[in-house]
Length: 307
Image (cartoon, rainbow, N blue to C red):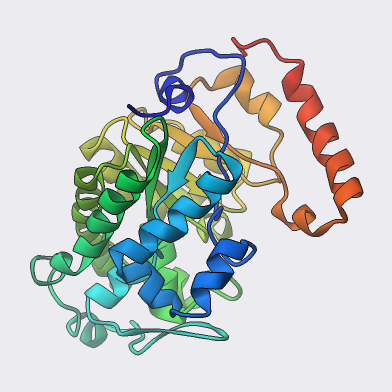
Protein backbone atom coordinates (compact mmCIF):
# COMPACT_ATOMS: atom_id res chain seq x y z
CA UNK A 1 0.00 0.00 0.00
CA UNK A 2 1.42 3.43 -0.93
CA UNK A 3 2.29 6.00 1.71
CA UNK A 4 -0.95 7.39 3.10
CA UNK A 5 0.41 10.89 3.69
CA UNK A 6 1.76 11.11 0.17
CA UNK A 7 -1.47 9.77 -1.32
CA UNK A 8 -3.38 12.42 0.64
CA UNK A 9 -1.17 15.13 -0.83
CA UNK A 10 -1.84 13.93 -4.38
CA UNK A 11 -5.58 13.82 -3.65
CA UNK A 12 -5.68 17.25 -2.02
CA UNK A 13 -6.68 15.88 1.40
CA UNK A 14 -5.75 18.12 4.35
CA UNK A 15 -3.60 16.52 7.05
CA UNK A 16 -1.71 17.68 10.10
CA UNK A 17 1.61 16.07 9.17
CA UNK A 18 2.82 16.22 5.53
CA UNK A 19 4.92 13.51 3.91
CA UNK A 20 8.68 14.05 3.99
CA UNK A 21 11.18 13.46 1.23
CA UNK A 22 14.07 15.40 -0.28
CA UNK A 23 15.13 16.03 -3.83
CA UNK A 24 18.43 14.18 -4.41
CA UNK A 25 18.00 12.40 -1.10
CA UNK A 26 20.13 9.55 -2.48
CA UNK A 27 23.53 10.84 -3.52
CA UNK A 28 26.98 12.12 -2.72
CA UNK A 29 26.30 13.37 0.82
CA UNK A 30 25.12 9.94 1.98
CA UNK A 31 27.55 7.40 3.46
CA UNK A 32 25.52 4.55 2.00
CA UNK A 33 25.99 5.99 -1.50
CA UNK A 34 29.66 6.79 -0.91
CA UNK A 35 30.35 3.16 0.00
CA UNK A 36 28.67 1.89 -3.17
CA UNK A 37 30.47 4.52 -5.24
CA UNK A 38 33.86 3.07 -4.26
CA UNK A 39 32.88 -0.12 -6.08
CA UNK A 40 30.75 1.10 -8.98
CA UNK A 41 30.61 4.01 -11.41
CA UNK A 42 27.71 6.46 -11.33
CA UNK A 43 26.44 4.99 -14.59
CA UNK A 44 26.52 1.45 -13.17
CA UNK A 45 24.57 2.59 -10.11
CA UNK A 46 21.89 4.04 -12.40
CA UNK A 47 21.67 1.34 -15.04
CA UNK A 48 21.95 -1.78 -12.90
CA UNK A 49 18.42 -2.13 -11.46
CA UNK A 50 19.58 -3.87 -8.28
CA UNK A 51 22.20 -1.21 -7.58
CA UNK A 52 19.80 1.64 -8.38
CA UNK A 53 17.30 0.11 -5.97
CA UNK A 54 19.95 -0.16 -3.26
CA UNK A 55 20.90 3.52 -3.67
CA UNK A 56 17.27 4.67 -3.61
CA UNK A 57 16.51 2.49 -0.59
CA UNK A 58 19.42 3.75 1.52
CA UNK A 59 18.08 7.16 2.66
CA UNK A 60 14.56 5.80 3.21
CA UNK A 61 15.99 3.09 5.40
CA UNK A 62 18.18 5.48 7.41
CA UNK A 63 15.90 8.52 7.71
CA UNK A 64 12.45 6.91 7.32
CA UNK A 65 11.41 9.23 4.50
CA UNK A 66 7.85 8.71 3.31
CA UNK A 67 8.86 8.62 -0.35
CA UNK A 68 11.72 7.08 -2.33
CA UNK A 69 12.95 8.56 -5.60
CA UNK A 70 14.10 6.61 -8.63
CA UNK A 71 17.89 6.77 -8.76
CA UNK A 72 18.71 7.78 -12.31
CA UNK A 73 19.63 10.81 -14.41
CA UNK A 74 17.71 13.13 -16.72
CA UNK A 75 20.26 12.79 -19.56
CA UNK A 76 19.76 9.13 -20.43
CA UNK A 77 17.13 9.96 -23.09
CA UNK A 78 19.85 11.85 -24.99
CA UNK A 79 22.07 8.78 -24.84
CA UNK A 80 19.17 6.63 -26.00
CA UNK A 81 18.68 8.88 -29.02
CA UNK A 82 22.31 8.37 -30.04
CA UNK A 83 24.11 11.40 -28.63
CA UNK A 84 26.61 9.41 -26.59
CA UNK A 85 27.03 10.10 -22.87
CA UNK A 86 29.96 9.84 -20.47
CA UNK A 87 30.14 10.85 -16.82
CA UNK A 88 33.46 12.41 -15.88
CA UNK A 89 34.84 14.06 -12.74
CA UNK A 90 33.83 17.41 -14.23
CA UNK A 91 30.31 16.32 -15.13
CA UNK A 92 28.41 14.66 -17.98
CA UNK A 93 29.83 14.85 -21.50
CA UNK A 94 27.83 14.30 -24.70
CA UNK A 95 29.56 13.12 -27.87
CA UNK A 96 27.19 15.00 -30.18
CA UNK A 97 26.03 18.63 -30.14
CA UNK A 98 22.77 19.54 -31.81
CA UNK A 99 23.33 22.74 -33.76
CA UNK A 100 21.76 22.07 -37.18
CA UNK A 101 19.24 20.03 -39.13
CA UNK A 102 22.13 17.75 -40.14
CA UNK A 103 22.80 17.04 -36.47
CA UNK A 104 19.14 16.29 -35.89
CA UNK A 105 19.23 13.74 -38.69
CA UNK A 106 21.89 11.80 -36.75
CA UNK A 107 19.43 11.06 -33.94
CA UNK A 108 17.67 7.73 -33.74
CA UNK A 109 13.90 7.53 -33.98
CA UNK A 110 11.84 7.28 -30.82
CA UNK A 111 10.65 3.84 -31.91
CA UNK A 112 14.23 2.57 -32.25
CA UNK A 113 15.54 4.14 -29.04
CA UNK A 114 12.90 4.00 -26.32
CA UNK A 115 13.63 0.38 -25.35
CA UNK A 116 16.98 1.64 -24.00
CA UNK A 117 15.07 3.10 -21.01
CA UNK A 118 13.69 -0.22 -19.78
CA UNK A 119 16.37 -0.27 -17.06
CA UNK A 120 14.40 2.49 -15.31
CA UNK A 121 11.28 0.33 -15.16
CA UNK A 122 13.29 -2.53 -13.70
CA UNK A 123 14.98 -0.17 -11.21
CA UNK A 124 11.59 1.05 -10.00
CA UNK A 125 10.32 -2.49 -9.64
CA UNK A 126 13.43 -3.54 -7.68
CA UNK A 127 13.17 -0.46 -5.47
CA UNK A 128 9.54 -1.16 -4.63
CA UNK A 129 10.49 -4.73 -3.75
CA UNK A 130 13.03 -3.43 -1.23
CA UNK A 131 10.90 -0.64 0.25
CA UNK A 132 8.51 -1.17 3.14
CA UNK A 133 4.99 -1.48 1.78
CA UNK A 134 3.89 1.84 3.34
CA UNK A 135 6.40 3.85 1.26
CA UNK A 136 5.74 5.58 -2.06
CA UNK A 137 8.04 6.10 -5.04
CA UNK A 138 8.51 9.06 -7.40
CA UNK A 139 9.99 8.85 -10.88
CA UNK A 140 11.31 11.76 -12.95
CA UNK A 141 12.33 12.99 -16.38
CA UNK A 142 14.07 16.11 -17.59
CA UNK A 143 12.04 18.94 -19.04
CA UNK A 144 12.07 19.14 -22.87
CA UNK A 145 13.61 22.64 -22.81
CA UNK A 146 16.28 21.62 -20.30
CA UNK A 147 17.21 18.59 -22.39
CA UNK A 148 17.50 20.83 -25.44
CA UNK A 149 19.95 23.12 -23.61
CA UNK A 150 22.06 20.07 -22.81
CA UNK A 151 21.81 18.80 -26.38
CA UNK A 152 23.06 22.14 -27.71
CA UNK A 153 25.48 23.32 -25.02
CA UNK A 154 26.21 20.29 -22.87
CA UNK A 155 24.79 22.13 -19.84
CA UNK A 156 21.60 23.73 -18.54
CA UNK A 157 22.89 27.05 -17.23
CA UNK A 158 25.11 29.97 -18.15
CA UNK A 159 25.01 31.55 -21.58
CA UNK A 160 22.08 29.89 -23.34
CA UNK A 161 21.89 32.15 -26.38
CA UNK A 162 22.21 29.22 -28.80
CA UNK A 163 19.27 27.19 -27.43
CA UNK A 164 17.21 30.37 -27.45
CA UNK A 165 18.08 31.34 -31.01
CA UNK A 166 18.22 28.02 -32.89
CA UNK A 167 14.49 28.31 -33.46
CA UNK A 168 13.88 25.76 -36.20
CA UNK A 169 16.30 23.23 -34.73
CA UNK A 170 14.66 23.66 -31.35
CA UNK A 171 11.16 23.08 -32.71
CA UNK A 172 12.16 19.82 -34.39
CA UNK A 173 14.15 18.59 -31.39
CA UNK A 174 11.34 19.39 -28.94
CA UNK A 175 8.83 17.51 -31.07
CA UNK A 176 11.02 14.39 -30.92
CA UNK A 177 11.99 14.64 -27.25
CA UNK A 178 8.40 15.23 -26.13
CA UNK A 179 7.35 12.05 -27.91
CA UNK A 180 10.27 10.23 -26.30
CA UNK A 181 9.41 11.54 -22.83
CA UNK A 182 5.80 10.49 -23.29
CA UNK A 183 7.03 6.91 -23.75
CA UNK A 184 9.62 7.28 -20.98
CA UNK A 185 6.95 8.39 -18.50
CA UNK A 186 4.87 5.39 -19.48
CA UNK A 187 7.82 3.08 -18.74
CA UNK A 188 8.24 4.54 -15.25
CA UNK A 189 4.54 4.43 -14.46
CA UNK A 190 4.37 0.82 -15.63
CA UNK A 191 7.22 0.08 -13.23
CA UNK A 192 5.12 1.35 -10.33
CA UNK A 193 6.01 5.02 -9.84
CA UNK A 194 3.08 6.97 -8.43
CA UNK A 195 4.13 10.33 -9.84
CA UNK A 196 6.61 11.52 -12.45
CA UNK A 197 8.22 14.87 -11.71
CA UNK A 198 9.49 16.89 -14.67
CA UNK A 199 12.76 18.57 -13.72
CA UNK A 200 13.10 21.73 -15.81
CA UNK A 201 16.30 23.12 -14.33
CA UNK A 202 16.73 25.61 -17.16
CA UNK A 203 13.12 26.81 -17.02
CA UNK A 204 13.88 30.00 -15.10
CA UNK A 205 16.38 31.14 -17.73
CA UNK A 206 13.56 31.96 -20.14
CA UNK A 207 11.64 35.20 -20.30
CA UNK A 208 7.90 34.87 -19.68
CA UNK A 209 7.26 35.18 -23.40
CA UNK A 210 9.70 32.43 -24.36
CA UNK A 211 8.54 30.29 -21.43
CA UNK A 212 5.00 30.37 -22.79
CA UNK A 213 6.22 29.60 -26.30
CA UNK A 214 8.84 26.93 -25.54
CA UNK A 215 7.95 25.27 -22.23
CA UNK A 216 4.18 25.37 -21.78
CA UNK A 217 3.12 23.37 -24.89
CA UNK A 218 5.38 20.41 -24.11
CA UNK A 219 4.52 20.24 -20.42
CA UNK A 220 0.83 20.46 -21.26
CA UNK A 221 1.16 17.66 -23.81
CA UNK A 222 2.82 15.35 -21.29
CA UNK A 223 0.53 16.26 -18.42
CA UNK A 224 -2.65 15.97 -20.49
CA UNK A 225 -1.57 12.52 -21.65
CA UNK A 226 -1.06 11.41 -18.02
CA UNK A 227 -3.53 13.54 -16.02
CA UNK A 228 -2.81 13.61 -12.31
CA UNK A 229 0.41 11.63 -12.75
CA UNK A 230 2.87 14.38 -13.67
CA UNK A 231 4.31 17.24 -11.61
CA UNK A 232 6.55 20.16 -12.63
CA UNK A 233 9.63 21.73 -11.08
CA UNK A 234 11.27 24.72 -12.77
CA UNK A 235 14.40 26.06 -11.13
CA UNK A 236 14.73 29.83 -10.91
CA UNK A 237 11.20 30.50 -12.13
CA UNK A 238 9.22 33.57 -11.11
CA UNK A 239 5.60 34.16 -10.21
CA UNK A 240 4.86 34.97 -13.86
CA UNK A 241 6.19 31.56 -14.93
CA UNK A 242 4.15 29.86 -12.22
CA UNK A 243 0.93 31.61 -13.21
CA UNK A 244 1.37 30.14 -16.67
CA UNK A 245 2.30 26.61 -15.62
CA UNK A 246 -0.49 26.35 -13.06
CA UNK A 247 -3.02 26.88 -15.85
CA UNK A 248 -2.26 23.29 -16.88
CA UNK A 249 -5.05 21.73 -14.84
CA UNK A 250 -3.91 18.14 -15.38
CA UNK A 251 -0.64 18.68 -13.47
CA UNK A 252 -0.62 16.89 -10.12
CA UNK A 253 1.58 19.45 -8.39
CA UNK A 254 4.62 21.68 -8.39
CA UNK A 255 8.12 21.90 -6.97
CA UNK A 256 9.60 25.20 -5.81
CA UNK A 257 13.15 26.25 -5.04
CA UNK A 258 14.20 28.34 -2.03
CA UNK A 259 13.39 31.66 -3.73
CA UNK A 260 9.66 31.21 -3.08
CA UNK A 261 7.42 31.94 -0.11
CA UNK A 262 5.34 28.76 0.01
CA UNK A 263 2.85 30.24 2.44
CA UNK A 264 1.69 32.54 -0.35
CA UNK A 265 1.41 29.59 -2.76
CA UNK A 266 -0.71 27.66 -0.26
CA UNK A 267 -3.31 30.45 -0.29
CA UNK A 268 -4.24 29.85 -3.92
CA UNK A 269 -3.06 26.35 -4.84
CA UNK A 270 -4.49 23.07 -3.53
CA UNK A 271 -2.39 20.68 -5.57
CA UNK A 272 0.84 19.07 -4.34
CA UNK A 273 3.52 21.57 -3.32
CA UNK A 274 7.10 20.36 -2.95
CA UNK A 275 9.88 22.48 -1.48
CA UNK A 276 11.70 24.51 -0.57
CA UNK A 277 14.45 24.70 2.05
CA UNK A 278 17.73 26.08 0.67
CA UNK A 279 19.87 22.99 0.17
CA UNK A 280 23.13 24.94 0.45
CA UNK A 281 22.37 25.48 4.15
CA UNK A 282 22.86 21.77 4.74
CA UNK A 283 26.56 22.57 4.97
CA UNK A 284 26.12 24.68 8.11
CA UNK A 285 27.33 23.46 11.48
CA UNK A 286 24.86 21.22 13.28
CA UNK A 287 23.57 23.72 15.84
CA UNK A 288 23.30 26.64 13.44
CA UNK A 289 21.57 24.42 10.88
CA UNK A 290 19.05 23.20 13.44
CA UNK A 291 18.22 26.77 14.47
CA UNK A 292 17.69 27.92 10.88
CA UNK A 293 15.62 24.84 10.02
CA UNK A 294 13.33 25.35 13.01
CA UNK A 295 12.84 29.00 12.02
CA UNK A 296 12.01 27.90 8.49
CA UNK A 297 9.45 25.36 9.72
CA UNK A 298 7.79 27.57 12.33
CA UNK A 299 5.36 29.41 10.00
CA UNK A 300 4.21 26.10 8.51
CA UNK A 301 3.66 24.53 11.92
CA UNK A 302 1.30 27.39 12.75
CA UNK A 303 -0.88 26.78 9.70
CA UNK A 304 -4.06 24.74 10.14
CA UNK A 305 -4.15 21.54 8.02
CA UNK A 306 -6.72 23.01 5.65
CA UNK A 307 -4.20 25.64 4.56
